[in-house]
Amino acid sequence: MRKIFAFIFAAMMLAACGADGAKLYRASDFGIVPNTGKDMTKAVALAIETIKKECAGKPAQLLFEGGEYDFYPEDANVREYYISNHDQDNPKLVALALEGVKNLTITGKGLLENPARFLMNGRMLPIAMIDCENCKIEGVTVDTRVPQITQVEVIENDTEKGVITYRVAPYANYRIVDGRFVTYGSNWDMVPCAGIAFEGDSKRLVYRTSDIGVGVTDVVEIAPRVIRAPWNDNRLVPGTVIAMRSYYRPTPGIFVSNSNNTCFSNVTVHYAEGMGLLMQTCENVTLDNFNVSLREGDGRYFTTQADATHFSSCKGVITSKNGLYEGMMDDAINVHGTYLRVVERLDDYTLVGRYMHVQAYGFYWGGAGDDVQFVKSDVMEVTESNRVVEIAPYDKEQIAGCKDFKIRFEHPLPQDIANGNYGIENLEWTPEVVFADNVVRNNRARGALFSTPKHTVVENNLFDYTSGTAILLCGDCNGWFETGACRDVVIRGNRFVNALTNMFQFTNAVISIYPEIPNLAAQTKYFHGGEGKGVVIENNTFETFDAPIVYAKSLDGLVFRNNKIIQNKDYEPFHWNTHRFLFERVINVTIENNDFDGGFDESSDVKYNN
Image 1 (cartoon, rainbow, N blue to C red):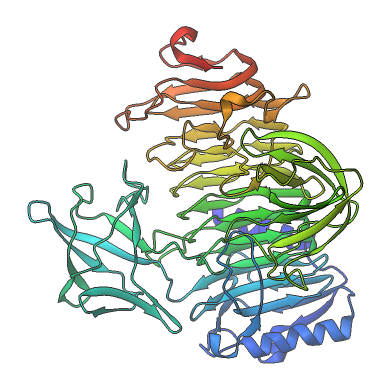
Image 2 (cartoon, rainbow, N blue to C red):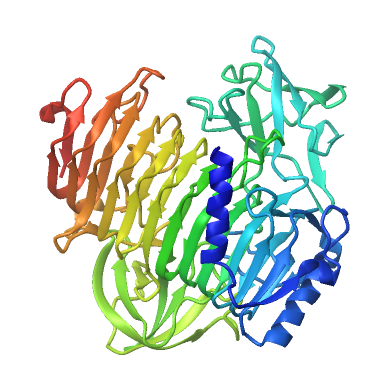
């Protein structure tokens, strides 16, 4: 019955978010036929170029029959893309390159029941959308035949000898080279350096394991696909499934840059060697039933190498609803901008700002007329605002690949602006966010991250065994250089089930409000909140085995009301934070009308370090 309703819903969405009145092109007319195993890269490129030429921006629809479409690196579109929060190696090998396209809908005819399945054969970027407008993708899945993450199952764990025997998943290719376990595909190979352990039956991360070492050296193959390795970890009982991985993230599953009014409906990414979806410098996006989820029946426990969805320096409204996010190696959603660090003062009005993180440079940061603000990175305080008059790449002739920008401002700059302690935040590229009716489960690290001053609503979601913190409000001008302060956040009607089974960065409570502030003692202002707003957490249910519910640092304005806290004994409590509420430099706090299992004692359950 659920599938029937899902199909009806998908059909309704096709009509609502589809291509009524658009010129119809059938993929099969270009020789794009499913289930052949042949490379469809050139044929799809021809179809896209034909539509661009014939329609010249007028509405068009490219319809794929349901089934599997294969793409290979040999005839891929070769592109130089600088993708936020990914490794900046170029060129990228792209399967579907949509560039300068307007008013195009790509549809998998079968939608949920029989989508168009785009399968990569090698290290590739499946879908790129660059400089597009009013484009939609629906009824499509993205996957890879041989993922770079290799799954193994523990068969035997001899803790006395420090030896584990494991079976390699059927899809994986591997060879033993000088005693090393080497995995490979058609255009890549690697020796995994880390792993994530999943419970064999539930597919949840194993309690208190976090990132683990893996047995990949001095190994012996004792039977086909059965490996014995020196590996001492008594937590990995027989039946444990381990996703062996590197930390490399060359490409997302879908990359969207400098595009407006983008819609994804009934789209699923089963695997990507980076984010599932990465959007940068885009305006207005709707995700409706966009999933980063396991493919039924294929036996994998993992999905993406990093975040499910990630939005860098976007504006307008980001709406993400009705999605399923599971098994990824990082967060379900991360929304932020990027700080530049001031590295040189050229004159009273002009400076040089630099991208600082190795995975975030080479793309558009801002333009003339943009309002910005300067932040002192040691205390994370805004010092003043200004407006960009002119901006240009400084270390290269073009934006692509540049790290430094020469920026001229409307008003004079402080004398000490280039002392190494100032960041610049672009306020023009900050979005409103709606994250609603989603399921986030069985993933590494955290659930949802938000760093935007615009109105943000997180409601009616299920955060089910997110492993670390379920919701993080961050901001960092020292390490990741991801902006910025959250001014107006509403978290309501959500259900949180057993977060914090593992420890990762920023995992101080189920909801963690955690900006990076190196010198908190010297701070005189507050990073998050202010202006009579702040963070409202209401009408949620927390089911937890441990103590910490909310941690907050440098926040002006917190309301925690009408929530229900259910204490269970699913795991042994272990968190270093033994307070339900732990506050560091937090003011204007209201905690009222909540229902706590075992009662609520403010003297012991709430701690202020102000």
